[in-house]
Figure 1 (cartoon, chains in turn blue, cyan):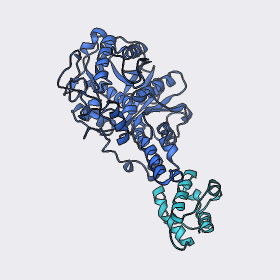
Figure 2 (cartoon, rainbow over the protein chains, first blue to last red):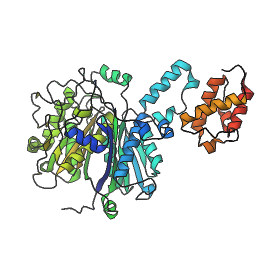
Figure 3 (cartoon, each protein chain N blue to C red):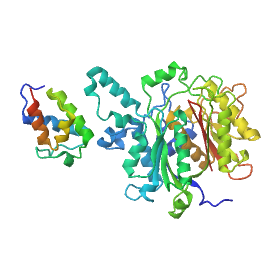
Figure 4 (tube, chains in turn purple, cyan):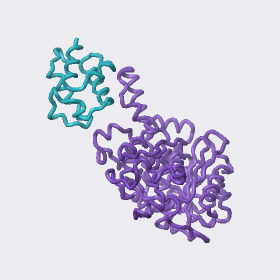
Length: 402
Length: 82
């Protein structure tokens, strides 16, 4: 048994999702089978920036960064941090936050002003609000965090990449802690039309991963932020540990711009790498939070990947998709789902894949249809939960929590 | 655009614009500085767009650099007003 002071731990989580404001709200409502999807979209309807941020803070941030700030406030408070009393040298606290589209709403409004009123009426705040690194910049500024900060951009794997790179930053000794996650607010008619044009969105507006009737994903918006700390330093300050980040595996398909490799070879390699990184075997896996987009191709390829990477263990592990309850949060998905994964592991409960009623040929894992169920014990060793994230461009990222 | 532009009209325009920047403009005077209002270069650029729209003048980057108070801003508008 390794020393619990080794490695990297999660000490705080925060989330704003279509299921409401709060990481535990996400966990509890999903576990209870609630859906945040309405009218074919997962909007963060309960989020009102004015309830959380000043007028100045609100106008200085696009919606995606506002979501990140509010999730960040929750995560830092959860970790017992405050702006005036950071537990480490601020120059040794990093910020890494992923996104898909960044401040696309700001870009669209700027374009509208340009078309209607000309170049001199484009809002001066356009660039700092729309830039894809605006969320980590805003968090760094809000809390005075002066370590390495940047955004990760790998489409729907961006949030998971952010967490994985934060793990590495701490492991490399370059930071004592990193505030990390993902943020997305691209539910605009234009972006929806663009996804629809490539036939990626569900025409019926229903997210039902792994079901034979699945016909595409449902877009969602939100953010999740996690506080990662060096385990020894977190123990020394008496922090509550929510989970260890045990492993991070990443690779690329090099197969097609958008379609996954049908056999799931890339995704399978990422799972195996995450297990290797954790020094673990498939027998230790007790839960897989699937990428599970509800697209015909992903759900089949991902099923193949899980079977290939976990072997015999695959049949014994509950596999569920957060996207069944909140839709696809794109660049925030990996972070929101990491939070859902570690809370599921903490509570030893697998939340359900909502809307999964009719199985598809060959898709024969335990997808936890409709109703939550307890996690099985590990077959030897420490229990691990995996969170899968795969992005357009062939980016595969798997995180292992334990 | 008002028919006759006066200092009072310009000051009132600024007073009405400031709440959208999250700033309480109730104590505003000619002597109030941007620094006191916590307005930075990005805010001033936006404020200048509002003034351009309301008074039909043009404010360039060099003009903005020279502004540091509400009084400066009012004087600039009056000097440019048609």
